[in-house]
Length: 190
Image 1: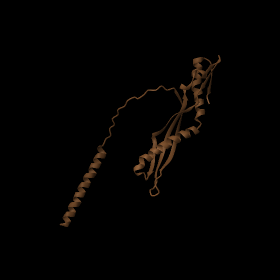
Image 2: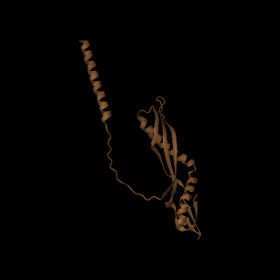
Image 3: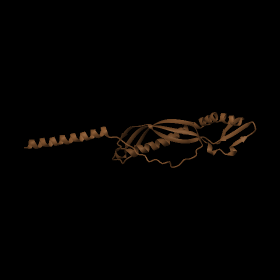
Image 4: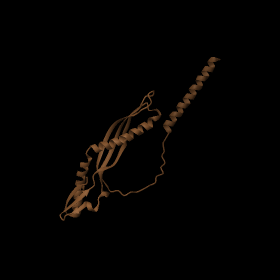
């Protein structure tokens, strides 16, 4: 009698286990994702920014989430690709920034600045996560925020301003020369 009960319990476990495995396999094969978007344009803005330099930066980042002494710290290692675009905001050019001496036109442009920075998520990778648990998402999110700040700092250290100035002169001098028929002198504000 005991043997029959044990065999019956084993049979029920095998049948239920097979059913669960079958359901999981069926879902993994047939599950499709569908997105529905409800887009709306919030605002269209006028822009007068001249993009002159794009700096691509890679960062290997180890983010640590410190926990109380009795729990191990959560760690994540990410390889982050970032982009910084620098240029000149031409909307800041005023009438008094352009002077005409008859044969020469002098244009004083604003100082080059960082116009946009972002982490490129398509080129970034999460390399490893240890002890993340329920805080994995916030650990990775904080890592991306820290990387964004560090990417801007690194771009500032590259000397992008001189490259922007040279690219602006190379790009704008022939255009202004063709329009005005005069020699062009491009200066920059401090």
